[in-house]
Image (cartoon, rainbow, N blue to C red; front, side, top):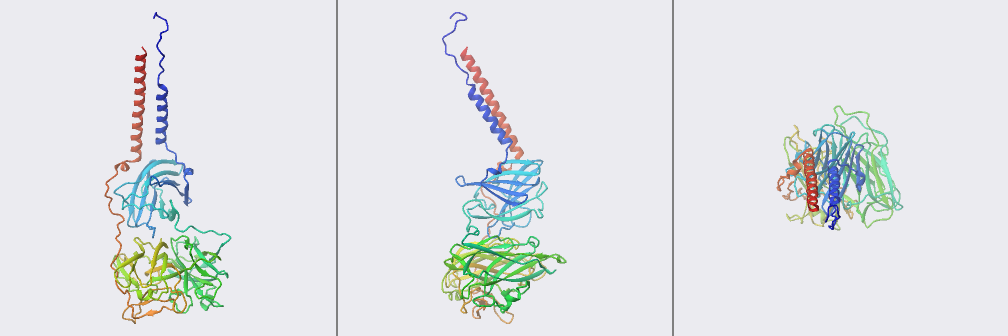
Length: 597
């Protein structure tokens, strides 16, 4: 062709559009990684644990992981823990520590076997997704597998989970003072027993003290009596109403019913229409109290009965129907000297329904409800005591029972507790009622359990204690400085004694005038069995505590890299990626130009 004449070749367009799209998307992608933003409103679940600490989450059951988002009003460290379900104490908990220094964040997967700074896990399983600090609020998003298979971690299971939380104002983990707490949440699945609210078929009523002035002494037991609604109904849910003024001092409440099938309340009930100091009805046979409706200790939440059972209250002539109650309060004021002028208005809330359920529920005590065990020597750890509910007692039951709840109760030296079910008085274990590996006096719990005790079976209850920091022998008794080993089982259908009262104990009992401890397997009438020594046969089957064992799958080094270093690595990789795109673009442009020429 002559110079200047249009040639016949097809015009070829430069493929720059694709390259620019790649460049644009890459910039957005790496900007999102480097400058993440936490949007907790996007999470389906959120709980406000305090006015300064909120937790949001989502669970991907297909990928088997959980994402947690923290919003905490602090510029210091943040702690989150998953506790043993039956206690929820710091010992035995799996922790995530979020450490912040110079606006840089580091995650530390940790665990604790004592009341001290958690120890770093061998395997680090938490991953940081995003971090942002706005004013004095820290936003952090982390992820982890639901079950890491690590014995220094707690699996996150469907249903209720006991969690712990804390935060501080310093960069390093230091004592949290009052900036901590515990709660029960359901991360996924359904709660074992959903909380019940008032409806057309369900009503509720509160029973509380009214500014009762506590005496200035270490241990105080207070009783107050109340009348229950005068309608035939089932009590189906209980909640403690704890006065925030005295919450550090209220340790326990027992709800006794002290009138059964009579037209007039007994003298004990009338005495405590005006609340006052008292001896527990558990230790006084003259009170006429014949059963328990509920037991509460520090750390417990709402207690809901299974849908097939309830406690009979209100009208009726049967001896186990509760018409009136006495609430027994246990206060501990350990200050030296004890704090004076404290006033309390604590109590309980009861939900009840007039639509009667299939079974009438009861509470029975195993262990040592009369606190007559021998004293504990000082300077010792893992001191074990054992009691029996022997088969000779359970043979008298008219039917097998279903246990839906269990509460192991000890005081400040308590360490572990468990109970096994045996085939008669033989050594063949047929089941387990409950076990608590890391007991905490300040975080006790009614455990939702599923167990059955058949007629003729034996139950052995164990408690272990630690007196290494005590210079004196520890007696068993009602005081906080004394000890207890009592197991409260919540069960149905209710079992009555020969006298028609609820059979509320199958337990150890001792007396200085007796050469051997014996068994009480009745109601408040005790029904002593002098021929049944206790424990009837010692139980050698314990539970191995394997929480805290070293991880065997090796270190995951990516989580050991500080957050700022990971950001630097991502930025570097991003720049290299962008340079490669630019280079490819230039080489592509040059090759097309040459081809065009």
